[in-house]
Length: 39
Image (cartoon, rainbow, N blue to C red):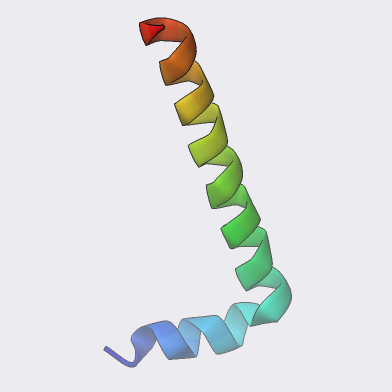
């Protein structure tokens, strides 16, 4: 379970923020697309 800590140290804070923002953008696109389709 300590593998993710090793991974986090390797990518660093900038990489972590990049993945976080990328994830938020994907969620935003998915929710927006769902609203367009099902509204």
